[in-house]
Image 1 (tube, rainbow, N blue to C red):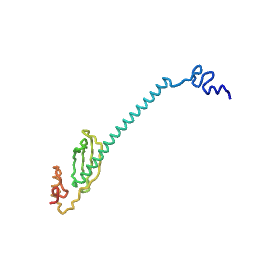
Image 2: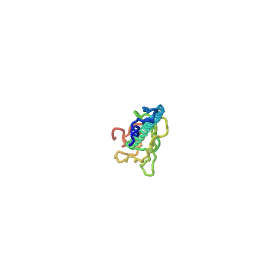
Image 3: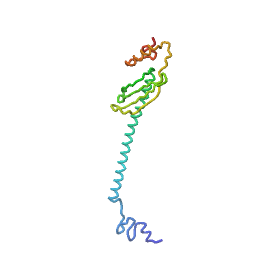
Image 4: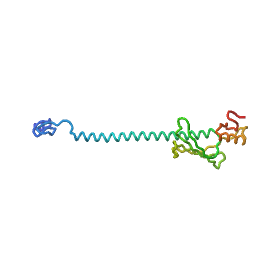
Length: 178
């Protein structure tokens, strides 16, 4: 083994040390160019990270709006199901309370099978008519199996509902059977 090579490996000897400086001086630290390159790379990384976080927040907000619209449409279908009597046509309105920013539009169409309706509920946000979510299903009208049920009483219930008044689903006034 060469003693001169050992000295060079340890940073001493002729021809410069491990740092490559003149006269055997070691170079310590980073140059200005190296620091600038590191700052530029970190800058690009931070910009990409901020854009990623912003995109994730926007996507999360959109996802929440679509989820709320889906739940509201399902709720509207359940409201129709619970009312019992269905009538063909279109209707629209606003959701109340916390969901006041959402609107619904529903279409009920009779099918060839007696008592079966095709139901389509679309939920949109605010004044925008473009639906966020559309739910389509089929509903049967509530069966008329009561002794108190007559076509006249069913028609009376339909008229009550058309005026926004509650109906029992059995032809009588809300609160009980006559």
